[in-house]
Length: 372
Image (tube, rainbow, N blue to C red; front, top):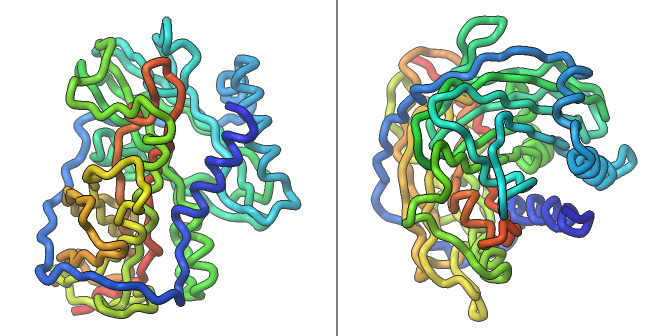
Protein backbone atom coordinates (compact mmCIF):
# COMPACT_ATOMS: atom_id res chain seq x y z
CA UNK A 1 0.00 0.00 0.00
CA UNK A 2 1.38 3.38 -0.95
CA UNK A 3 2.09 6.17 1.58
CA UNK A 4 -0.84 8.10 0.09
CA UNK A 5 -3.19 5.20 0.84
CA UNK A 6 -1.89 4.97 4.41
CA UNK A 7 -2.35 8.72 4.75
CA UNK A 8 -5.93 8.36 3.58
CA UNK A 9 -6.57 5.50 6.01
CA UNK A 10 -5.23 7.35 9.06
CA UNK A 11 -7.05 10.50 8.00
CA UNK A 12 -10.29 8.55 7.55
CA UNK A 13 -10.00 6.99 11.01
CA UNK A 14 -9.64 10.34 12.74
CA UNK A 15 -12.28 12.08 10.63
CA UNK A 16 -14.85 9.29 10.86
CA UNK A 17 -14.50 8.93 14.61
CA UNK A 18 -14.51 12.66 15.29
CA UNK A 19 -17.46 15.01 15.43
CA UNK A 20 -18.19 18.62 16.36
CA UNK A 21 -19.31 18.64 19.98
CA UNK A 22 -20.87 22.08 19.87
CA UNK A 23 -22.44 21.92 16.41
CA UNK A 24 -26.20 22.28 16.02
CA UNK A 25 -28.01 19.41 14.27
CA UNK A 26 -31.47 18.32 13.35
CA UNK A 27 -31.96 15.42 15.76
CA UNK A 28 -34.24 12.44 15.23
CA UNK A 29 -34.81 10.01 18.10
CA UNK A 30 -36.36 6.56 18.09
CA UNK A 31 -39.19 6.71 20.63
CA UNK A 32 -39.00 3.07 21.70
CA UNK A 33 -36.14 1.62 23.70
CA UNK A 34 -34.51 -1.19 21.70
CA UNK A 35 -34.13 -4.51 23.51
CA UNK A 36 -30.65 -6.02 23.21
CA UNK A 37 -29.82 -9.72 23.11
CA UNK A 38 -27.29 -11.41 25.41
CA UNK A 39 -23.98 -11.89 23.60
CA UNK A 40 -22.69 -15.41 22.99
CA UNK A 41 -19.12 -16.50 23.59
CA UNK A 42 -17.08 -17.87 20.73
CA UNK A 43 -16.69 -21.64 20.78
CA UNK A 44 -13.05 -21.36 19.70
CA UNK A 45 -10.23 -20.09 21.91
CA UNK A 46 -6.89 -18.32 21.61
CA UNK A 47 -3.73 -19.43 23.42
CA UNK A 48 -0.99 -16.89 24.10
CA UNK A 49 2.34 -18.41 23.04
CA UNK A 50 5.04 -15.78 23.19
CA UNK A 51 5.61 -12.07 23.78
CA UNK A 52 9.26 -11.92 22.75
CA UNK A 53 9.58 -8.94 20.43
CA UNK A 54 12.66 -10.16 18.58
CA UNK A 55 11.28 -13.58 17.65
CA UNK A 56 7.84 -12.24 16.67
CA UNK A 57 9.33 -9.37 14.68
CA UNK A 58 11.30 -11.91 12.64
CA UNK A 59 7.98 -13.47 11.56
CA UNK A 60 5.85 -10.32 11.29
CA UNK A 61 8.48 -8.55 9.16
CA UNK A 62 9.69 -11.62 7.31
CA UNK A 63 9.16 -10.36 3.74
CA UNK A 64 10.19 -7.17 1.98
CA UNK A 65 6.49 -6.29 1.61
CA UNK A 66 5.98 -6.61 5.39
CA UNK A 67 9.00 -4.42 6.08
CA UNK A 68 7.82 -1.78 3.64
CA UNK A 69 4.33 -1.79 5.19
CA UNK A 70 5.79 -1.30 8.68
CA UNK A 71 8.10 1.46 7.43
CA UNK A 72 5.21 3.32 5.79
CA UNK A 73 3.03 3.07 8.88
CA UNK A 74 5.69 4.18 11.35
CA UNK A 75 6.92 6.97 9.06
CA UNK A 76 3.41 8.36 8.85
CA UNK A 77 3.30 8.85 12.64
CA UNK A 78 6.81 10.00 13.57
CA UNK A 79 7.67 10.92 17.20
CA UNK A 80 7.20 14.65 16.55
CA UNK A 81 3.73 14.18 15.02
CA UNK A 82 0.58 15.44 16.71
CA UNK A 83 -1.23 12.27 15.66
CA UNK A 84 -1.62 9.55 18.24
CA UNK A 85 -2.74 5.98 18.48
CA UNK A 86 -1.27 2.60 17.68
CA UNK A 87 0.79 1.45 14.71
CA UNK A 88 0.21 -2.27 14.12
CA UNK A 89 1.10 -5.14 11.84
CA UNK A 90 -0.60 -8.54 11.92
CA UNK A 91 0.53 -11.78 10.32
CA UNK A 92 -1.53 -14.97 10.03
CA UNK A 93 0.01 -18.38 9.39
CA UNK A 94 -0.70 -20.56 7.54
CA UNK A 95 -2.04 -18.25 4.83
CA UNK A 96 -2.89 -20.17 1.67
CA UNK A 97 -3.61 -17.14 -0.53
CA UNK A 98 -2.80 -17.83 -4.18
CA UNK A 99 -3.59 -16.43 -7.62
CA UNK A 100 -5.33 -13.07 -7.61
CA UNK A 101 -5.29 -13.03 -3.81
CA UNK A 102 -1.56 -13.64 -3.47
CA UNK A 103 0.17 -11.23 -1.07
CA UNK A 104 -3.17 -9.62 -0.16
CA UNK A 105 -3.80 -9.03 3.53
CA UNK A 106 -7.51 -9.70 3.21
CA UNK A 107 -9.19 -12.16 2.75
CA UNK A 108 -7.06 -14.90 4.29
CA UNK A 109 -7.41 -18.50 3.12
CA UNK A 110 -7.02 -21.12 5.85
CA UNK A 111 -7.24 -24.90 5.94
CA UNK A 112 -10.26 -26.38 7.71
CA UNK A 113 -9.87 -28.03 11.11
CA UNK A 114 -6.32 -26.76 11.65
CA UNK A 115 -4.84 -24.37 14.19
CA UNK A 116 -3.87 -20.88 13.05
CA UNK A 117 -1.03 -18.77 14.44
CA UNK A 118 -1.51 -15.01 14.74
CA UNK A 119 1.45 -12.64 15.18
CA UNK A 120 0.87 -9.07 16.39
CA UNK A 121 3.38 -6.24 16.58
CA UNK A 122 2.36 -2.82 17.89
CA UNK A 123 4.02 0.55 18.50
CA UNK A 124 2.84 3.22 20.92
CA UNK A 125 2.57 6.27 18.63
CA UNK A 126 1.35 8.52 21.42
CA UNK A 127 3.72 11.05 22.96
CA UNK A 128 3.29 9.58 26.45
CA UNK A 129 3.34 6.09 27.99
CA UNK A 130 0.06 4.18 27.74
CA UNK A 131 -1.38 0.75 28.40
CA UNK A 132 -3.04 -1.28 25.67
CA UNK A 133 -5.71 -3.97 25.70
CA UNK A 134 -6.44 -6.20 22.72
CA UNK A 135 -9.81 -7.91 22.23
CA UNK A 136 -10.55 -10.62 19.67
CA UNK A 137 -13.97 -11.20 18.13
CA UNK A 138 -14.72 -14.10 15.80
CA UNK A 139 -17.96 -13.55 13.87
CA UNK A 140 -18.58 -10.81 16.46
CA UNK A 141 -18.39 -13.22 19.39
CA UNK A 142 -15.67 -12.58 21.97
CA UNK A 143 -12.87 -15.12 21.93
CA UNK A 144 -11.46 -16.18 25.35
CA UNK A 145 -7.67 -16.11 25.70
CA UNK A 146 -5.64 -18.68 27.61
CA UNK A 147 -2.69 -16.71 28.92
CA UNK A 148 -0.22 -16.55 31.81
CA UNK A 149 -2.97 -15.43 34.19
CA UNK A 150 -5.55 -18.04 33.25
CA UNK A 151 -8.50 -17.58 30.89
CA UNK A 152 -9.38 -13.92 30.24
CA UNK A 153 -11.60 -11.96 27.84
CA UNK A 154 -8.68 -9.91 26.51
CA UNK A 155 -4.91 -9.53 26.58
CA UNK A 156 -3.21 -6.59 28.32
CA UNK A 157 0.19 -5.41 27.15
CA UNK A 158 2.52 -3.95 29.79
CA UNK A 159 2.83 -0.17 29.96
CA UNK A 160 4.37 1.03 26.72
CA UNK A 161 6.67 4.05 26.50
CA UNK A 162 6.27 6.46 23.60
CA UNK A 163 7.56 4.84 20.36
CA UNK A 164 8.06 1.50 22.14
CA UNK A 165 7.29 -1.73 20.25
CA UNK A 166 5.75 -4.82 21.80
CA UNK A 167 4.53 -8.09 20.29
CA UNK A 168 2.34 -11.12 20.90
CA UNK A 169 1.99 -14.54 19.26
CA UNK A 170 -1.16 -16.62 19.70
CA UNK A 171 -2.70 -19.83 18.41
CA UNK A 172 -6.36 -19.88 17.33
CA UNK A 173 -8.00 -23.28 17.67
CA UNK A 174 -9.37 -25.00 14.57
CA UNK A 175 -12.25 -23.28 12.79
CA UNK A 176 -15.13 -25.02 11.04
CA UNK A 177 -15.22 -24.67 7.25
CA UNK A 178 -16.88 -21.56 5.87
CA UNK A 179 -16.71 -17.78 5.91
CA UNK A 180 -15.62 -16.10 9.17
CA UNK A 181 -14.67 -12.61 10.28
CA UNK A 182 -11.88 -11.93 12.78
CA UNK A 183 -11.95 -8.50 14.43
CA UNK A 184 -9.06 -7.27 16.56
CA UNK A 185 -9.87 -4.30 18.80
CA UNK A 186 -7.15 -2.07 20.27
CA UNK A 187 -8.23 -0.27 23.47
CA UNK A 188 -5.99 2.38 25.07
CA UNK A 189 -5.75 2.82 28.85
CA UNK A 190 -8.65 0.49 29.69
CA UNK A 191 -8.30 0.94 33.46
CA UNK A 192 -7.99 4.74 33.37
CA UNK A 193 -10.86 6.35 35.30
CA UNK A 194 -10.18 9.99 34.39
CA UNK A 195 -13.31 12.06 33.82
CA UNK A 196 -11.42 14.71 31.85
CA UNK A 197 -13.47 15.24 28.68
CA UNK A 198 -10.48 16.11 26.48
CA UNK A 199 -8.60 12.97 27.51
CA UNK A 200 -11.69 10.82 27.01
CA UNK A 201 -12.14 12.19 23.48
CA UNK A 202 -8.49 11.54 22.57
CA UNK A 203 -8.75 8.06 24.07
CA UNK A 204 -11.88 7.40 22.00
CA UNK A 205 -10.14 8.53 18.80
CA UNK A 206 -7.27 6.09 19.46
CA UNK A 207 -9.52 3.01 19.58
CA UNK A 208 -9.01 0.87 16.48
CA UNK A 209 -10.48 -2.17 14.78
CA UNK A 210 -8.67 -4.37 12.29
CA UNK A 211 -10.83 -6.93 10.56
CA UNK A 212 -9.93 -9.94 8.46
CA UNK A 213 -12.16 -12.22 6.45
CA UNK A 214 -11.18 -15.86 6.91
CA UNK A 215 -12.05 -18.29 4.14
CA UNK A 216 -11.71 -21.63 5.89
CA UNK A 217 -11.61 -24.51 3.46
CA UNK A 218 -13.39 -22.44 0.78
CA UNK A 219 -12.17 -20.44 -2.23
CA UNK A 220 -14.87 -17.76 -2.38
CA UNK A 221 -17.18 -15.96 0.04
CA UNK A 222 -20.88 -16.82 0.33
CA UNK A 223 -22.96 -15.51 -2.56
CA UNK A 224 -24.80 -13.13 -0.23
CA UNK A 225 -21.60 -11.30 0.69
CA UNK A 226 -21.72 -7.71 -0.52
CA UNK A 227 -18.92 -6.76 -2.90
CA UNK A 228 -18.14 -3.24 -4.13
CA UNK A 229 -16.67 -3.57 -7.60
CA UNK A 230 -15.93 0.14 -7.88
CA UNK A 231 -13.54 1.97 -5.54
CA UNK A 232 -15.61 5.15 -5.49
CA UNK A 233 -18.74 3.28 -4.43
CA UNK A 234 -16.85 1.36 -1.75
CA UNK A 235 -15.31 4.50 -0.29
CA UNK A 236 -18.67 6.29 -0.38
CA UNK A 237 -20.28 3.40 1.51
CA UNK A 238 -17.44 3.45 4.05
CA UNK A 239 -17.97 7.17 4.62
CA UNK A 240 -21.71 6.77 5.06
CA UNK A 241 -21.45 6.12 8.78
CA UNK A 242 -19.54 8.84 10.56
CA UNK A 243 -19.35 8.20 14.29
CA UNK A 244 -21.25 7.37 17.48
CA UNK A 245 -21.61 8.71 20.98
CA UNK A 246 -23.68 8.06 24.08
CA UNK A 247 -25.34 11.44 24.70
CA UNK A 248 -26.84 12.69 27.94
CA UNK A 249 -30.21 13.62 26.42
CA UNK A 250 -31.97 12.16 23.37
CA UNK A 251 -33.06 15.63 22.21
CA UNK A 252 -29.95 17.67 23.10
CA UNK A 253 -28.59 19.35 19.96
CA UNK A 254 -25.18 20.12 21.48
CA UNK A 255 -24.22 16.42 21.58
CA UNK A 256 -23.30 16.59 25.27
CA UNK A 257 -21.70 13.20 25.96
CA UNK A 258 -22.78 10.97 28.80
CA UNK A 259 -19.69 10.51 30.98
CA UNK A 260 -20.94 8.84 34.18
CA UNK A 261 -23.89 6.88 35.47
CA UNK A 262 -25.17 5.33 38.71
CA UNK A 263 -27.24 2.13 38.49
CA UNK A 264 -28.48 -0.61 40.77
CA UNK A 265 -27.35 -4.21 40.24
CA UNK A 266 -29.11 -5.84 37.27
CA UNK A 267 -31.06 -2.63 36.58
CA UNK A 268 -32.18 -1.94 33.01
CA UNK A 269 -31.59 1.55 31.66
CA UNK A 270 -32.22 3.21 28.28
CA UNK A 271 -29.09 4.88 26.89
CA UNK A 272 -29.08 7.33 23.97
CA UNK A 273 -26.72 6.23 21.19
CA UNK A 274 -26.35 8.98 18.58
CA UNK A 275 -25.29 8.06 15.04
CA UNK A 276 -23.65 10.89 13.10
CA UNK A 277 -23.69 11.40 9.32
CA UNK A 278 -26.12 8.52 8.88
CA UNK A 279 -27.91 9.96 5.84
CA UNK A 280 -26.32 9.69 2.38
CA UNK A 281 -25.52 12.99 0.69
CA UNK A 282 -27.36 14.29 -2.35
CA UNK A 283 -24.54 13.16 -4.65
CA UNK A 284 -23.89 9.82 -2.85
CA UNK A 285 -22.88 6.86 -4.99
CA UNK A 286 -24.06 4.35 -2.37
CA UNK A 287 -27.68 4.90 -1.35
CA UNK A 288 -28.72 1.48 -0.04
CA UNK A 289 -29.16 0.59 3.61
CA UNK A 290 -26.18 -0.05 5.86
CA UNK A 291 -26.24 -3.12 8.16
CA UNK A 292 -25.07 -2.26 11.67
CA UNK A 293 -24.00 -4.68 14.39
CA UNK A 294 -24.14 -2.85 17.74
CA UNK A 295 -22.11 -4.30 20.62
CA UNK A 296 -22.20 -3.19 24.26
CA UNK A 297 -19.23 -3.93 26.52
CA UNK A 298 -18.93 -3.82 30.32
CA UNK A 299 -15.27 -3.67 31.38
CA UNK A 300 -14.41 -4.80 27.83
CA UNK A 301 -16.51 -7.95 28.07
CA UNK A 302 -19.09 -8.15 25.28
CA UNK A 303 -22.44 -8.53 27.03
CA UNK A 304 -25.26 -7.33 24.75
CA UNK A 305 -25.78 -7.05 20.99
CA UNK A 306 -28.35 -6.00 18.40
CA UNK A 307 -28.54 -5.79 14.62
CA UNK A 308 -29.93 -2.58 13.14
CA UNK A 309 -30.61 -1.70 9.50
CA UNK A 310 -29.64 1.92 8.83
CA UNK A 311 -31.88 2.88 5.92
CA UNK A 312 -31.06 5.49 3.30
CA UNK A 313 -34.00 7.54 4.55
CA UNK A 314 -32.48 7.88 8.03
CA UNK A 315 -31.88 11.46 9.19
CA UNK A 316 -28.38 12.85 9.21
CA UNK A 317 -28.12 12.37 12.96
CA UNK A 318 -30.17 9.57 14.47
CA UNK A 319 -30.47 8.72 18.16
CA UNK A 320 -31.19 5.09 19.05
CA UNK A 321 -32.36 4.26 22.55
CA UNK A 322 -30.72 1.05 23.76
CA UNK A 323 -31.86 -0.93 26.79
CA UNK A 324 -28.72 -1.99 28.64
CA UNK A 325 -28.58 -4.10 31.78
CA UNK A 326 -26.19 -3.35 34.63
CA UNK A 327 -23.96 -6.10 36.07
CA UNK A 328 -25.43 -8.11 38.93
CA UNK A 329 -22.55 -7.31 41.29
CA UNK A 330 -21.93 -3.89 42.84
CA UNK A 331 -18.72 -2.14 41.85
CA UNK A 332 -17.10 0.31 39.44
CA UNK A 333 -17.39 -0.40 35.73
CA UNK A 334 -16.63 1.12 32.36
CA UNK A 335 -19.39 0.88 29.77
CA UNK A 336 -18.75 1.32 26.06
CA UNK A 337 -20.29 0.47 22.71
CA UNK A 338 -18.96 -0.29 19.26
CA UNK A 339 -20.71 -0.43 15.90
CA UNK A 340 -19.49 -2.65 13.05
CA UNK A 341 -20.70 -2.71 9.48
CA UNK A 342 -19.70 -4.16 6.07
CA UNK A 343 -17.48 -7.23 6.01
CA UNK A 344 -13.84 -6.87 5.18
CA UNK A 345 -14.17 -8.68 1.84
CA UNK A 346 -16.76 -6.18 0.62
CA UNK A 347 -13.99 -3.60 0.62
CA UNK A 348 -12.05 -5.35 -2.16
CA UNK A 349 -12.79 -5.64 -5.87
CA UNK A 350 -12.39 -8.78 -7.97
CA UNK A 351 -8.60 -8.35 -8.27
CA UNK A 352 -8.07 -8.01 -4.52
CA UNK A 353 -7.54 -4.23 -4.70
CA UNK A 354 -8.85 -2.32 -1.68
CA UNK A 355 -11.82 -0.07 -2.48
CA UNK A 356 -12.85 0.97 1.02
CA UNK A 357 -12.01 0.81 4.71
CA UNK A 358 -14.30 -1.07 7.13
CA UNK A 359 -13.85 0.64 10.48
CA UNK A 360 -15.42 -0.28 13.79
CA UNK A 361 -16.68 2.89 15.46
CA UNK A 362 -16.47 3.37 19.23
CA UNK A 363 -18.14 5.50 21.89
CA UNK A 364 -16.35 7.15 24.75
CA UNK A 365 -16.16 5.00 27.88
CA UNK A 366 -18.78 5.77 30.54
CA UNK A 367 -17.82 5.47 34.21
CA UNK A 368 -20.63 3.49 35.88
CA UNK A 369 -21.07 3.00 39.62
CA UNK A 370 -23.28 -0.01 40.40
CA UNK A 371 -24.65 0.35 43.93
CA UNK A 372 -27.30 -1.57 45.89
